[in-house]
Image 1: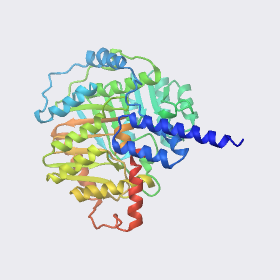
Image 2: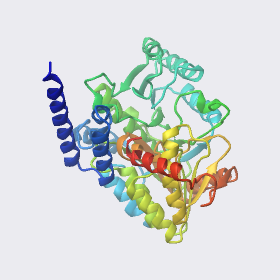
Image 3: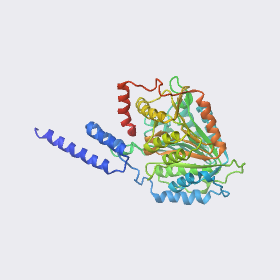
Image 4: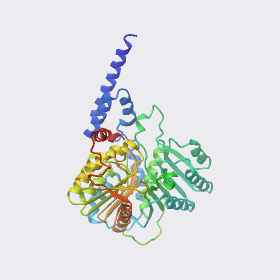
Length: 474
């Protein structure tokens, strides 16, 4: 028994050293590598456990084979998606080429868009569109709560399935940990095909708990699509506590829906291993007036070699000439995005960033403060939204390009999560989002370097610095 403790300490030391070697050999940013080394050195046992849960890099794992992606792309969307020759805006061609080259995010026309900034209007529109479905409904949501709204959506889906409509639902397993499985079982008994994305079964898949499907999209009959930041949960309608919920979701019509369809079917192949390539999922689009707007649906994921959406943000910031307006609920930017933000502001671009005044997570709020202080010093105008919780994820630049979707400006969205954004090219959509930002700005307060938000006392600043170290892990 006297030898048991030395043996355990030796074994633990060897495990820690092996993990540290693995961390060093993984192509991470120096900041993230240093954070993990500090965690492993100074948080015994728990640090190793955290690494196996949250630290393993699966970006180069082929969770979905390249062959399957090519099949889905070539045999379905490209074969059936017929468009008139597109005239691509010259100033946006490099960004569009970046997305097209990286992950087959091809440009499509947009016939019509409706922007929703509150859950009441969005869920009424979603339920109405589902009610009109005649062939299929494809729904993907990070959270699908077992509350009044979740049960209402479930009832609608069950009614459509019993009426002969194909209904497929994907929910994230970790995002729905608090959801009773009886809700999904009831949908299955009602004829809805429901799957969890990357179920976590301990300890077999501990490394997968860190890589979640954060996308929120819906495709109905291949002709109407929805994408944005709202999950299926009552708080997106009623708010949380005394705070109303302010968010952003977009309804799309036109050929761009083909790209949303492809995105869903790739995720469906991942959860169901069924390769769906039928032409009926890419139906001819009804003739509508040309809006002049072109869009690309960009699906970033940790399985791809490059973080596409983060690259897009950096490219837009570096090419901006007049202004860049951004909204995000969480602000812990990666080094490239932080550098691009500060560079654009220093170059005289009107860079505005809007964050919630009342955060919903203690550690992320404190971690973001040091980043906020840094961009304010660089000349970025930071506004705190005061009339509820701001959950909107949006960027608009120079009345020419804008984006919205599920991506937050933080490490987790840019590097770890499966995310989905739509990038629009054209003045019409850019002005819609710009006007939303300006209206929200009226409900916000501008931060100044001497604002009470920034503490100049020693211990709060020390606490901010410590929490900032762990921002890549939050």
